[in-house]
Image 1 (spheres, rainbow over the protein chains, first blue to last red):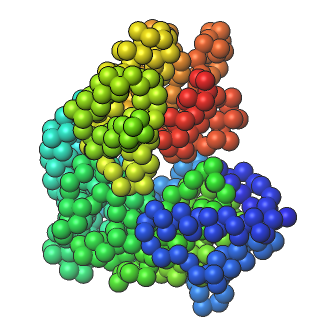
Image 2: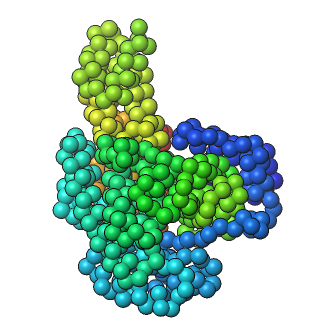
Image 3: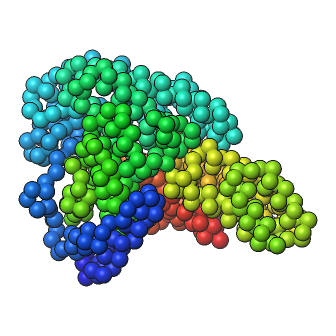
Amino acid sequence: MVQTRLGDGSTIEMTEEEIRADIERGVEDATDRANIDSLSEDEIDRLADIYTRPNKFVSVETGNELVLTFDEGSVKLKRLAVSIGRIPDLQLYERAFCSDTAEMAHIDYSYKPIKPIIAEEQIEMEQALLTTVLPVFYGAMPNLSLYSQPDGSFPNPAELLPKGKIKEAQEAYEGMVEHAISDMVFVASKMYEAGADGINFDTTGSAGEPDFLATLRATEILKEKYPDISIEMGMSGEFVLGMHGEIEYDGVNLAGLYPHEQVKLAEKAGADIFGGVVNINSSETIPWNIGRTVTMMKACAEVANIPVHANVGMGVGGVPIVETPPVDSLSRASAALAEVGKLDGL
Amino acid sequence: MSNELFKKAADAICDANVDKAEELAQTALDEGIDPLEMIEKGFTAGINEVGRLFDRGELFLPQLMGCAEAMKQGTAVLQEVAAEQGGDEAEAIKIVLGTVQGDVHDIGKGIVASILEANGIQVFDLGTDVPIEDFIAKAKEVDADIIGTSALLTTTMGENEELLSTLEEENLRDEFKVMVGGGPVTKRFAEKIGADGYAENANEAVTIIREIVG
């Protein structure tokens, strides 16, 4: 018997055959949902090998190492109740965690609330850049929800839709998109001008496809304004939730797109790194979850012309939904995405 | 003949065709089909398909609302007759739903509310940042079967335990089933705190609710 886990983090024991069967079921689920190619038998064997080894920690073969980018870096240690400022936090990522890039973020982590404190953020970024050598991104979420009542001026689509006011909800979303673009471009411009090496639009699409549209258009505007700006676009879920239903970008309806489709639009908008997401089902096993994660992310990496860095952490990318991911699952997911998923980074 | 009608009813829900749903409901009654059978094999089959498509990203929220409306109007025609025939059988399950205090996440909870309503479950949506006492007061007011909570933050998940403790303290634990959900919430967490149910997504919530209310 081999020790593995459920998606909720609890440890379970399975036979090698059961693990392989669950990986196959996960692969099938991914191909069925996202309408993508299956993994080959060899690739499934490779995954089964990674998930049946007795080692606590599994890594990649030399030469298969990936670039590691971190979102929300300067906030995560604080969440673990570590008393630390943002700059020492970034230094830890650089000097202790072996990060290839780090991200400065504000605890509110949305572009809208950063706007009035932008000067403070610029100063902090300058200081961070003077005391680190790794590329420092500035990141936050588009978080379109902040633009509707009670946090914003637009009527709340979540209240309009159940009343059947679909047109009114769609109009509200369209207005919210314009405001979000304005805030994202403003904050990203200021931070880039303050010296940030890149901008991260994180958890894109969390409020549905209007959120994704705002990010794509903000990316386009920023790339036109600053051709050398580096933009990372991280997603919030494996498919884009359809909250509006009729929003298009480049002639493509954004609702319901899976990672291999999302990345093409991110590319078109000018993003430099795409952070794909595949969600965890907490009731299924980790072998099942990794089967579908690798299948979806591999399909994404195959069609991408920009680097794909999968989100790997609590509840995404084959990692259980626990606040501090267990090293057995985290290292296996990383190895699987590197060696079978053929990604560029995590 | 019935099977053909059930199929048409299911299609009417998937197509969000309110007029057609009402017309088919009336046809079923005219043909002497048991209204509850028409709801189960026709309209419910349709709304289950709607839920499946939504879960896969093949159908979107505005369309879902239209499907829910067709379900609501179609089943209303049948339920009126079912209530006359069978009394309590057609009574809807009542759930008081909300996002726990300290948490303002609304989207997922709103989707769950829509799917539950579409499945004929009566939802009393208290919104977000809901204090425990408000959940309990509303549940008592409407004589709810279930209190359903959503928590999207690891820091607010604890409110679920508080809710259960308060229900115990007020000798109300047996009055209401408690169901929990949300991003960081898992089945294991639900079992650990003694909740009656947990669902991974809105579709599963419908099944679990029917199981625990029985």
